[in-house]
Amino acid sequence: MSYLKYITITLFFSILVTACGKDAKKLENEMENTTQTISNTKNVVNEASEMQENIQQLHEKEYLTKEQWGSWLPEKVLDMPLTFSQINFMPGLGSCGANYKIGNKRIRVMVIDGAGERGAGGVGPYRMSSKMEYNTEDEWGYTKTVVIDGVNAKRSYVKTSGMYSLSMYYANRFAVDIEIHNFSEDMLEEIVEALNLSELKKF
Image (tube, rainbow, N blue to C red; front, side):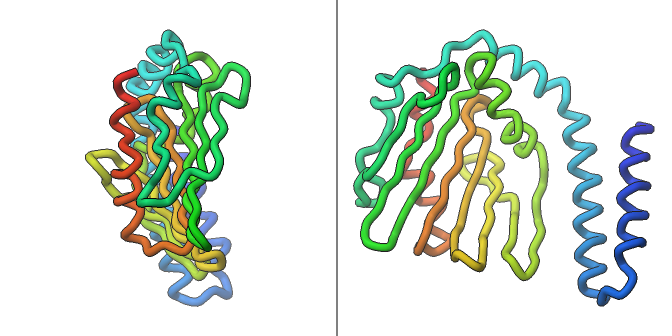
C-alpha cells in the first residue's frame, strides 16, 4: 500500500506543478487521466498473482507451428484478400502477421503467441493492459476500453492518419493487434469476428 500511496502523491503533485498557465479544460483532463492511472495501478497490483500464474503456465507450452498458424489464418477478411503474411519470423517466438488490402482500404493483423519463455514475456504488456481501464481523449485522438466477445480490448483512434486500432490479450495466451485504414470505427468488431480468433484456442 505504501507504494500505491507514493504513486498517488507523486502524480498529484505533478499535476499541480504542470497546471500553471494551462486552461481549466486541460487541467480537468489531466486530473481525470491521473485518477485513471492510479486506478489502473491498483488493478495491476491486485492482479499480480494471477498474472504470475499465467506466465508460469505459458512457460510450459509450445508455441504454434507454421502449419498451425496456416490452418487458422483467413485467406480473406470481409472479402479483402490476404496480400502479405509472415509466420514465426523471430527465433523462439510464435507470431503471425498478415495484411489485407483492397484499393485504399487496409487491415493489418499481428498475433503473438505467449507460449514458451520468450512468448510469455512478449505478451506481457498486453496481459497488463487487459487489467486496465482506458478512457482518454485529446486533440490527437482517443484511447478507450471496449469489450468484444467478453474480452477487454483497448481501442484507439489517431486523427492525423485516420487510423483505428484494437489490441487485446486473447484466451490468456495471445496478444492481438489490429489496425484498420479507411474504415469506420464500427468495423473493428466485425473484423475481430471475421478473424475467428476462437480457432486459436484449439491448439
